[in-house]
Length: 460
Picture 1 (cartoon, rainbow, N blue to C red):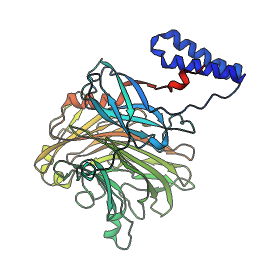
Picture 2 (picture 1 turned 120 degrees about the vertical axis):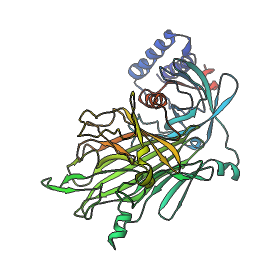
Picture 3 (picture 1 turned 30 degrees about the vertical axis):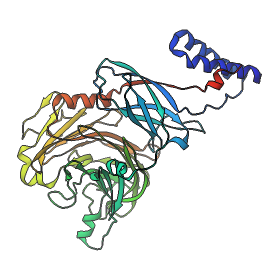
Picture 4 (picture 1 turned 60 degrees about the horizontal axis):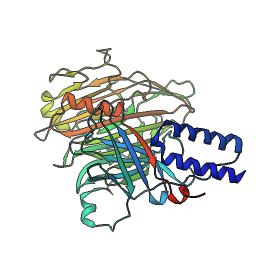
């Protein structure tokens, strides 16, 4: 029986290696899988990771030029930090980076000898309706050159924050203060962690920290102003304004990496109620990709109750995941702020807010264009249907914008949210905003064919 299994396995690998020859080969593969699994009744030989692949990419109806592409692969954990060379048809190549699955990914688990993730790379041109076949290969590690490290992405930590640098200049900063309730002033300064974003070219910080108009608005942040909890659900806590003893506290950095294409940070944050009881644990992750035109940030969060069932409620001005621009916008330039929405470029002063406008729900995206440091900047926020509930939207002239939804948080039902942010200098066009949003909503299709060990294919 083992001899039959080995012969069938060898034949399967041969068919896989030549599967582009036609559908008949794929059908034979399927038959052999069934024979191995049912007739033989024995486990398959272990599948080892590949170090090279063929990517067959279909752009679909979206122009993917200068936007990240992701091919799902499994590799040997020992090689996870190696760079990837992606060869193009014209003989040139681009750099790729392997990124493991996120902390709370629902992807199919990898085998015991591999780690599952994606190879991330960026093509200079991939127009809509185009298909292209590329070769990708892990390349040997090269000696670290200090000048190259300085030019690339890297994390540094000091004074209660973790800073992501690009070319030595700030790109993103995670502010993680140590909670200090010794005075009201220090309590307000330290009651929530958040992320700042910067223009890496000029070093200008685009987001507001503590203080200023609405001190609780800080960078990219997340909270709810009405959290019903307790044995009867009548206790209400506010982790948006962080009233009474309510707060969010940074607890640990779970992952922090920087590669040639992307940087990732994953942190754990605890939510505490107004009665000082521990409510929930949040895993918050940012995946950051600097591009030629701007910075792409994928924000994901998983909130798990630590206090039994609770109800997350509020309104779109005081709950959910939001962006708040620098205080300068509120003080001096808010009359120049305007928004883009699907199919609409609004005039300054034309803002939409639920519940005044109850049709402003479930928008696929919206973007704020505002002025900081004498220059216009654009921030695009993209929603996804993976988020639960009715998304109720909000926009303000000082460039605080986002959305929220109500949610019943249960021990067996954590809250998971996902948003994509695009930050760039200059004015984002309606057409480009539509393209970037469509790229996330309907990713390019990539068929991955791993290489097969020639010694196995030639065995008898």
